[in-house]
Length: 331
Image 1: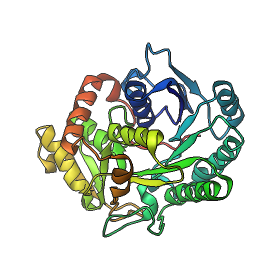
Image 2: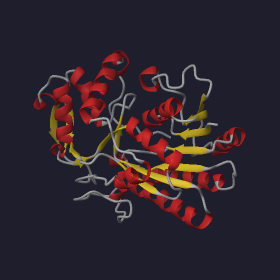
Image 3: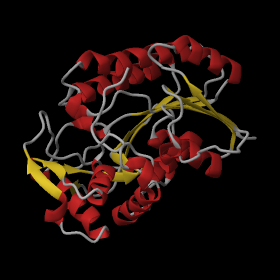
Image 4: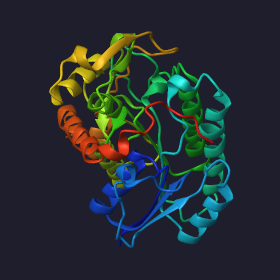
C-alpha cells in the first residue's frame, strides 16, 4: 500500500520536480502539493500532476494561513511531509532580514510544533541549504560547525537546530536534507543558469559578480528528488544528509558551459561586475553519508542538465522572454 505525501513549497520548480518524481517512481497513493500562490503558467508548472487523480494543488501561505494548511493535513492525513517552503536568495536577505526569519524559522517552528501533535505523521523532511556551512576549503560534512554568512542562511540554520532538538527530546520524526544549488526546468529566471540562457537568446549579457570566481556545487532537482524519495523510504529518522556532487564548479565555468552548449563564447555572454555582499567563496558538500545509508549518488551530469534547461527555455521562449530576471521578495 502506498503512502500519502505532502510537499510544501510545491509552487516552485524543485517542489514540483519532487512531486513529479514521487508520483512516477515512489509508492504514492496521494500527493498534496502546497504553494503560497496559485499555480504558475505552464512554462513553470510543466503540467506536473495533470490528469493524475492522486495529485491536488492548494494555494496556502505557510506564514499567514497555517490554520488552513493544518485543516488540510488533518483531513488528508499525509504520512510523509516534505518542506521546501522558504524565503530564498541569500544575496538579498540583508534587506528586510526579518522576513526571512518570519518564514524560514518562525512559521516552520509553529508548523512543526503542531505536526508533533498529529499521530498520522510518520516523517517530516526539511529541505535545508548548503549555505549554512559558510565558505569552505574542503567538503562539508553533516557534523561540521555551522557558519552562516547571510541572514537567509542563519534563518535556515535556526530551524535546522530546532528540528534537531525536537527529534532528540520530543521524538519528532524528522530528517534534514541539505542540498547544493539545485536547478531544473521551470526554475525562475533570476537563477544563474536560466538567466544566462534567456540572456543569450535575447542577445544580452548576464552580469557576473566578482568575475564568477565563487564556487558552488550544482545538482539537478531530479537527482535531489530521488535523494528525498530514498530517505523517505529507508533513511534513519533524525539523520541529516548532505546532497550534492563530488566537486564544486566556479560560476564562471558554469556560465562558460552554458555558452558552449549554446554555441557561444564566454566573453560574448557576460559582463564582469562587483561582488555581492556576503558572497561565500565556495560551497562544497561531502555526500558520502547518504550514499552509505540509502545508496544515493547523482546521475545527471552538469552538461546534460544544462542541455535540458536550454531545451526548456527554447520550448517556452515566447512565455519566458518577458519574465523578470531579478529576484523579487514576495509576501
